[in-house]
Length: 115
Image 1 (cartoon, rainbow, N blue to C red):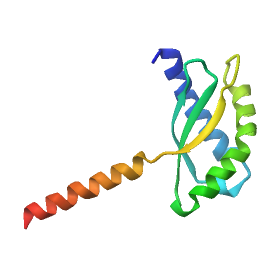
Image 2: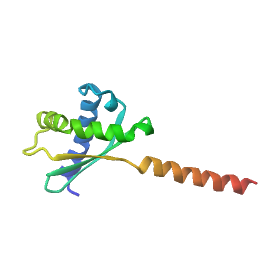
Image 3: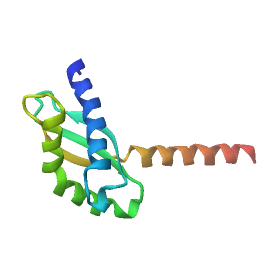
Image 4: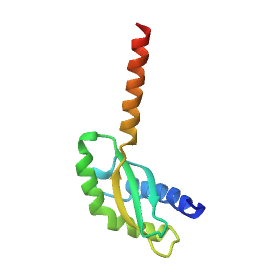
C-alpha cells in the first residue's frame, strides 16, 4: 500500500472519530469507536471499521451510521483536502471479539496445564 493511502486511512480514522464524538446528535452513534479505515487504491470507496461499547446495539448502530454517512462524508470533504471524498461503508470490526476468544482459549489451556 502506498504512503498516501496509509496517511489518508489514518486521517479518516481521526476525523470520523471526531465527527462521531462531537457533531452527530444521534444517541445510537455516541459510543462508537472507529478502529480502522481501508480506502481503495482508486480513492472511490472507504471501509470504516467500527466497534460498539454495548454489543446488543450493534445492528441499530450500523443502521444509524448508514443513515448519517452522507453527513459524515460531507464533513470529511470539508476537513480533508482530497479531490473526491470516497463513498463510506461502515463495517463492524470483529477482530476485537476474535482476539478475546483466542485469549480465553489460551487462558483455558494454561489453566489446564496448571492442574
